Length: 146
Image 1 (tube, helix red, strand yellow):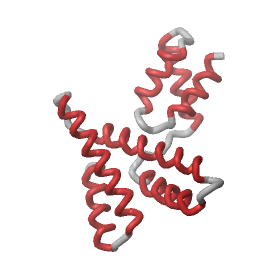
Image 2 (cartoon, rainbow, N blue to C red; image 1 turned 45 degrees about the vertical axis):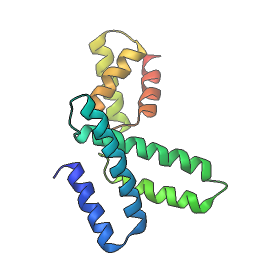
Image 3 (cartoon, helix red, strand yellow; image 1 turned 90 degrees about the horizontal axis):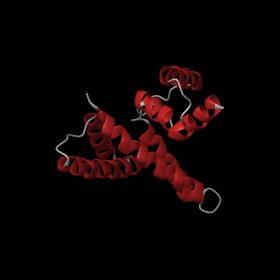
Image 4 (cartoon, one colour; image 1 turned 135 degrees about the vertical axis):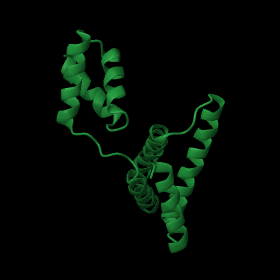
C-alpha cells in the first residue's frame, strides 16, 4: 500500500469514527496533495511517495511555525497545531540518527574531495531524501567542514 492509499484509508476511518481533528488535518493534507498533483501534471509527472513526503514535510513545517507563534499567547490553538503535527508525522519516514548523518557527510566530503558547503549539502540531501531535517543537516555539514 502506497502512502496516498494509506492517507485515503485513514481519512475514511476518521470519517466513520467522526474524529474531527484527524479528519480536518487529513482533509487539508489531501488538498495540498491535490494541488501538488496539478502542479506536476503541467510537468507531465505523476505524484509519487517522494513528492507526497515533500508535501507532508511542508505541512509539518507550517504546524511547527504556527506552534511557535501560539505557544505563549493561545494555548488552545497551540494544542490544535500540536495534534495536527502528530497526525502528519505518522506518514513521514523515520528520521535518521545524527551519527548516520555525520557518516554520510564524511563520505560525501571524501567523495567530492572538497569542503564546498553547497555541493556537500546537495549530495547529502539527495541521499537522505526526506529522512532528515534540512536545518539539522546544514548544521552538521558546517561542523564537519570546519
